[in-house]
Length: 304
Image 1 (tube, rainbow, N blue to C red):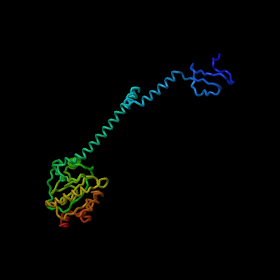
Image 2: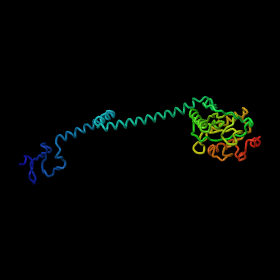
Image 3: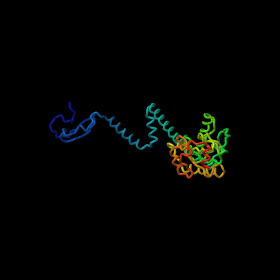
Image 4: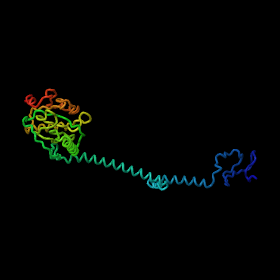
């Protein structure tokens, strides 16, 4: 039997009609019931559903107002154990990566700044200062003093831009020659990328840098590979000039000495194209083949 107040006929009604949904009065209308858009109502939604939706909306508004840290803790508490474990692991990994990045950044700056502050001399570093190992160097260039020919080469080893790094590079280089070839570092002097001059065998000593020429020449080795990535700095060239001026002043080097690249006297790529271009700007540079494949006696007569 129809409930009172609900219009059951298809014709128009002149009385006030009430639509009943879920035992609640939703709307009271006058006129034609057919004009009511019943699609606007959810006939299946009960009081509890309405209350739940309202509660969720209130919680959403509250979540917007709480601080991020509290919100994060709240999310973690409501997550499963697996999700919490994965989140913690990801957070720990992120912290570890950041810590390593900070550590290596700080250490790089420390090495760059402190590495040079510990240098015992502005540019002239003796064997004692770079802690060279003892080697039995006894052969001298006495028969050809003062030396008249300077040969420039590169070491084809990693660059070193601080005193500490260059000391390590030279000690490694010396160890290689002593262990594998059973003789001392081959150059008389080496020029680091830090612009310092490091004593190898030193003044007046026969080197082992260029076959046929060791008895009557001064061998200088620039640390690095100047045929590819290593660039020559102005400081390196200026410090090399200081070394050669010192040699002239102390009588080890003839005032009219000649500078040659190793590639100009033998078949080699040394000292590399970058260094070779820098040498061409020097006053004492000899860019000819007149010293190629000749012995010390001939050289001594050529430049006397």
